[in-house]
Amino acid sequence: MNIVCERLRYGARLDIVDPELFQSRYRDALVCVVGGGRGSAMSCQGVAQGMWLPLRGKLQMATGDASFSLEPGQLFVGEPDQRIQASGRGAALWVALLGSKAAWRRTLSRVSGMLVPTPVLMPSWHEARPGLRRQALRIVRAALTQTREEPLLAASEDVISALLELQSDFDTMIDRCPGRTLAQRHQVFLRLQRVRNHMAASCHLDLGVPELARMASYSTWHFIRAFHEVYGETPYAYLVRQRLDRARRLVRASPLAISEIAQAIGFENRSAFSRLFKQRFGVSAADLRRQHGLSARRTLGRVTRREMDELPLRATSASRAANSGQLAGLMDF
Image (cartoon, rainbow, N blue to C red; front, side):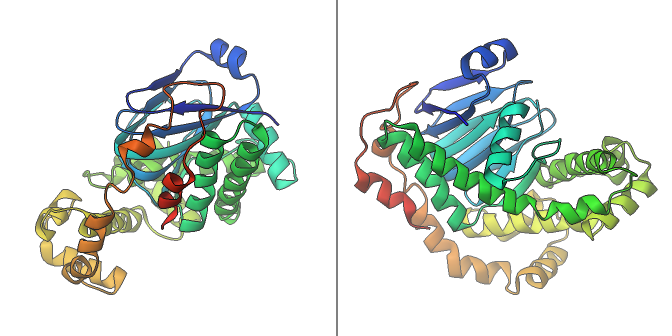
């Protein structure tokens, strides 16, 4: 297994849109992208599948049908050959791993020790717990300080292993999908995941069930039934849960008033929002803000411009050694 590292800092951009150029440059290697600072950006289209994980700041994502902010604590896996653009906001620090289907199949087979079926990775949103984020920081450290491939490869494999563990929850869901063969059930699950990811990215919008059913190539009735059988909840229940999770993040870090947050995420009724919020999290939005609002503001912007300057604009060789003290401050989760 080979790995190639691309490093981006303020204003640097990496475009991976030509399949022939991608193949000639990276062949079947896994591509690790480490981005830092405002405007560090990349785009890929029709050449690879990837995962994106912000560690500090926000990563603005744009797919074919949605635009959303990816925040620390969230991990996003795109669809194979999907058009995706990612751009760092503010003092952002983020990691992406990309590869062709062959590269991912070889990598995942190596990490898991078993043959990996197609599709290689399921498109999804995952919660990136502190342990996973610390593993991703090892990728950053290896990208900044090492001249050998082995540390970067080992750190990347640890992150991929954690991702496989997260995706193992999908096995039972795939078994519940309609279809006579495993390949058919995989395809059904892929269609449902495409809709579910759209709901997660656009939960603040007024999404209608008939529209979502058309995305999955189902009738409305069959879509609701299949969604419930696979995920154990209705599409509406999942949408409300995503809205409440987004509201919690805003309550802890946004200066918006509680009523403004409720409206921004799609709740027209403030009372309904308050009741559902407390029911889900066991605390009111106002109490949560009092508990975490100050600490959330203190943690914003912990990654400094000086730290981001350690990332060269573009390099295929290792950058100059980074001060370990600069990176140590990033590991406080």
